[in-house]
Amino acid sequence: QQQVKQSPQSLIVQKGGISIINCAYENTAFDYFPWYQQFPGKGPALLIAIRPDVSEKKEGRFTISFNKSAKQFSLHIMDSQPGDSATYFCAAMPGNTGKLIFGQGTTLQVKP
Amino acid sequence: SAVISQKPSRDICQRGTSLTIQCQVDSQVTMMFWYRQQPGQSLTLIATANQGSEATYESGFVIDKFPISRPNLTFSTLTVSNMSPEDSSIYLCSVAPWGANYGYTFGSGTRLTVV
Image (cartoon, rainbow over the protein chains, first blue to last red):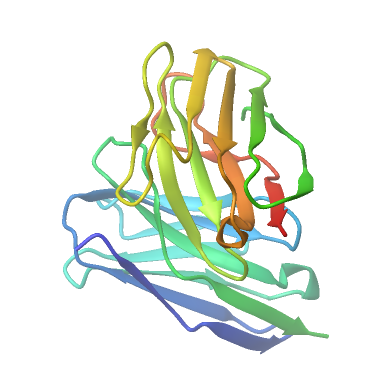
């Protein structure tokens, strides 16, 4: 009920391609869905976030697509660059608790 | 967004000892949280650091093992007590902007190795 399932575990994309990472959840009380990017030795950095009343949010090359009925959301990275190579985590927050429940993470490698 | 400083950034500790990790924020924040990230794994919430009162722990985490203090709106500590090798992890502090319940940022973490 409290889990967020993320796939794939790892992803290899050519430079300029589109990276797509998917997450699914069960708990309908989740009200906030952020994505984080983490480089080795660093803390997670907030990338983009969405609330369930919106189906899509775009910031630069990063887009979240949200499907409330399917309880799924995904991160699309357009024109992927080698500098995007990192681990990406989706997360969800139940209500206004402030508590983030993270997916398992996806290691993205963008090949030059 | 708030800037978080965590100390120490890393440490190697003997089993049976304790380590206190500090989280300092450059501005007042409402909510502060502590997370654990085991090697190669995702993040798991340990507890909510409540200002002026006892921390609220998640299932699987107890105060005797992870005592937390939050004396004011910009500072918190997490102690990992009576450490074992299984406690080897990255410990991260997280905060949201004052009055907000979104946009949570993380410190760089404390990488703990217990030998």
